[in-house]
Image 1 (spheres, helix red, strand yellow):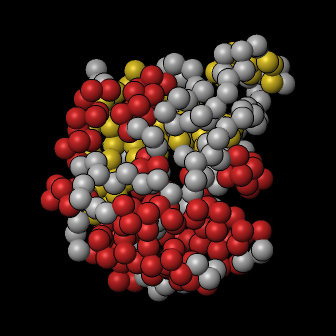
Image 2 (cartoon, rainbow, N blue to C red):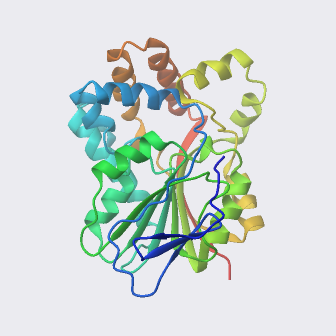
Length: 316
């Protein structure tokens, strides 16, 4: 999905791209580095909607999805008030819930795969110092906004890189932490992503992600899901694979060289998301998107689709 550069290219004398991979020189003090690769973005209609609304100056969309483009987390869901401000705080908390389990510490090199508008990178940038932060995404439009919105602080270094989650332009054993916040269901292959994550992680590395994980019975029903039903969801959210159970994740992890160290079912804590997102789409005049969001919310409320945060460590 991306085209690598085959000749060496120097970036401000501090980083080198060789064969499509980034390499840092010793003693680098570069604040921001980036790689530009030609990519073929997959169809994600909801990002088309959000980017259009942001370009039009929609303040509600800016508050809800201008930083993070994922669900929210409420420690006490009954306190959610449905406001854009309340949701933005909840989305920040969700990102924190994911990276907290990765035991991020100063001097870590961290890769956020499917980084969106850079919200998780921004949160880490504001919370830690001396980090080397890389956001990876296949959509150049999202990366453009991330570069505009997120600037390094506290001796951090930040890069936003174009590339495929299943063929990452990242060197072997160069990262301490890999994150994938609510995006793995868009990847062409979870198996390929897990193997890529293992490749780029150092010994002792950590992988943390969040995903919509079905219970076994629901997965069986999904396999009989009609083409019309799949198109209904894809018309808003693009390609979505939500057929991977917790048992499947354990098997994927073991095959790729990981151990599942912790898993949390936070479905209840995310449920106030659905009416907010539904209303954003309805206000934009996209009623099919609003109905698709409501349908996913119903599946979650009924217990068929669980929102889980999963933490893995490289197996010793």
